[in-house]
Image (cartoon, rainbow, N blue to C red; front, top):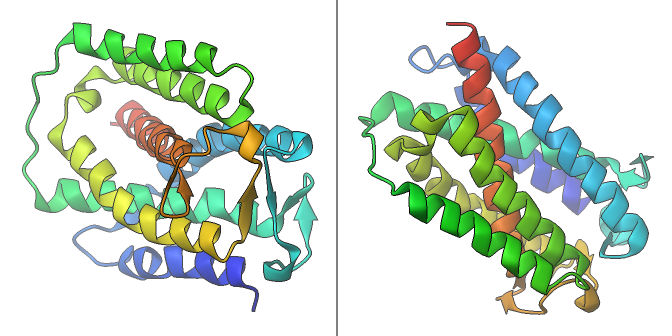
Length: 223
């Protein structure tokens, strides 16, 4: 079994097994999960295809099956299915076991953060990864504000993101240290936390927040 496929299996195996536990019954919410994956993962896959073609990052063939789809390793496509599954499962578990609180978040702070992301993006227009990930991060905050402000102010939403960062650090460390995923130093800031590019933390925030957002929006439409 190749390394990247094994990582994908490890990401999803426990959340999938627990999806049928009677209290959480996550399997009953798969339609909303699918909606989120179709909207969010598709957008990130398009970015992935473009970034791979222009050389922002690449994949070590020694750790792949050799099967490609849209010129991406099939394992990379699976990553955009297994990771949202795990992250949204965490969100549902947090909602089940923790009491939610509505946080007081100053609107000025929200807009300031978005503007700062845009400024960083423009300042790094010549670094493809930095530029794109900062745009995506800014847009994710704006979408949260307009599509589901209640979620944005939810304590469980932020707790879920924080918890999701633990497996993110573990998985991303292996992906970048083996390495399975390699980065072009000219495409990002070249700042790394251990072996993980700094930009990956913003990449993960934008993905996780968007997966949860569109999952939650889908659920609300069916209530």
